[in-house]
Length: 135
Image (cartoon, rainbow, N blue to C red; front, top):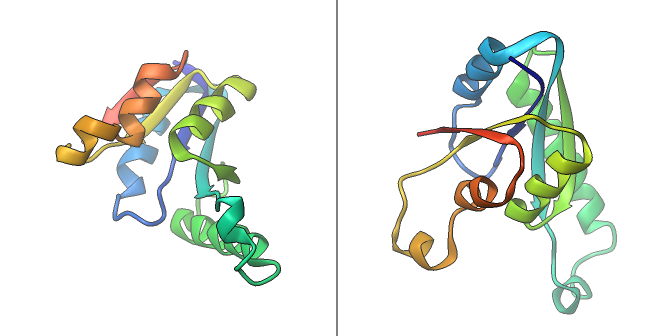
């Protein structure tokens, strides 16, 4: 059983978070916690100067609201929104917060994944936490 479970959520993809929550619920130790994390992709500095003031703050707040709406009545799941590159940020966040299991959704790999690697593949390769991958 795991005491600190992280569920990365890509709000821009059509993944059913219900399956990830079900797995997390079954694997959660008594007194443990589940956190849903969304990573807002950072905007390169050369492009950020052309965006309206407060753009990133609005994206973060909109993402937080969307994540909370997706969870609905699940008040027992903490929500976090951070900025960065999804694969690296998930791994770093898990390490910094003592996560012992990451439950992450994956898609069928396409040709681009063989060259660049998907977020799930990056997390699996680089995290020290246990990882449960959903297909």
